[in-house]
Image 1: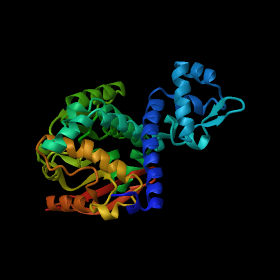
Image 2: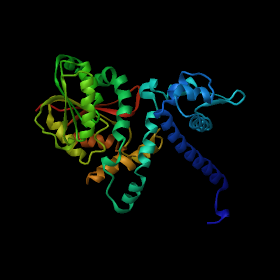
Image 3: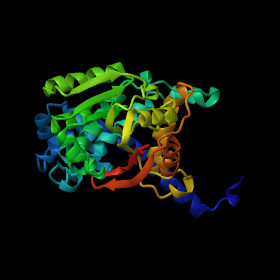
Image 4: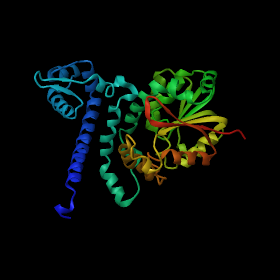
Length: 359
């Protein structure tokens, strides 16, 4: 290929795009750092401030704060008054980057970038040799997932998400048996347990570490109607013991997702509901070209969700498995998918309202 073979306008535009990707990736790392050390939260309440003031309010090293502010300024996240040497986090930016933003806090999700970078060399190895990276290598995954999902559950679960299931609030208030399969650190099941003291709740996850976190939170909340099991979601007992089952972003990264769904079906009483939240996407790449976080979704899929499944000789569905594949698997297990809903405040998920028909 020679210079004359190239469309120079197209080349220039692509160069700008590549530069934007590089700067965006770097900004994601700095946003993650800013979240972890609460710099966005500090700046949201400070108004126009000097480096010295921001360092003092945050209790952080001034030299690091200055360099971080420079990165955030060039990324157009922080505004800089060069005449007065003052930095400001605009209210509109704080509304998407601080802990007070709840589920709209996008800095939560930036933490996945450094998490995935830790396993890059292992992913490269598996590109060449197959297989995948096990859960144990993602050392901070449960903590990041728990923080991101907790903001969503606290804001939306009881009053927005659960009402998607017909009549479920009344049933929960009266008292039923509920399970959250793939519960992770257990915040969802603890939130439900606190809201509905007449019902009994069981959190199920194969990670003993996550279950320990869930139990500690349950004890701290003084919940007596919540219990936990360390169990593989693909090996549920299937004794029709539950009236209602939930899963939150837990199906697509299973090694054997069809076994999990079949186990949920057999564990649910006739006429019971399964509420499944999972990433909003199409099963067809061509329909995801305009997906607002499509590149992020496929990257997380390749470097975590798909790879984790393959590490256990699994199906490797991946995060972007999509609504069509989900419907196929759910109906194959015997469920009737009554609705695929979206909720305000959770742009990333579909909510599948699945019913087990009476015999």
